[in-house]
Image (cartoon, rainbow, N blue to C red; front, top):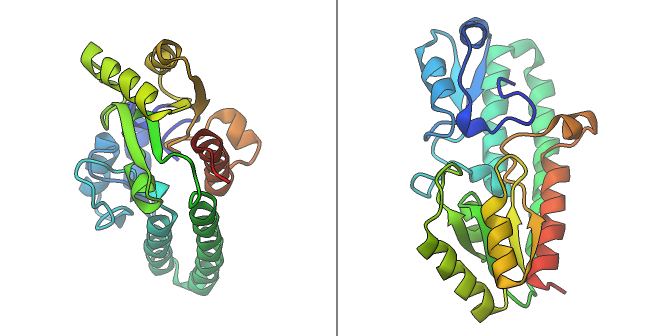
Length: 235
């Protein structure tokens, strides 16, 4: 993984050693559509196989966060398994079997989200940045983001005022922040509107603590589901 633990992946700049790793690797997986431009550019320059795992899966213009929809994540797993099996034919069956088992787990996760979010008092989620469009579309939620796709852009006072009014009008209980970007605006908005804050993780990178605890996509997504159920008043 070229993104160090706890580093915001949008901001990653490659070192010369990173570029050498990309050039020398038997197989490279990356996410295009502007998610990590430096990695995508280096991957496309190499002579050996490089697979954009999100190609064809991103239906929301400018938004690369397809993996927050478990059904799209399952399609990415197929793509990864095919590329890995082609690069290592001797272990192709082993990798296809693993992919099949993991897709069953993803299907179970999708069912958990669908069932848990089907009877809620609210459907609006106020998020730190617009990373949850695919998740919202899959489970019929409405995302209202403090900033756009890039978490580095500061919101305007007008946008903060709009969200404060929306929170009061629609009875929103929670402003979601993220662990890898400053939470100042989320805290300010929540304090102004008189509501709480909670973590909603876009799964762009794990922290060192999460790596050490063997956290993964499934464990973090289930924590996200718990946070959503609490915020939306789901029964």
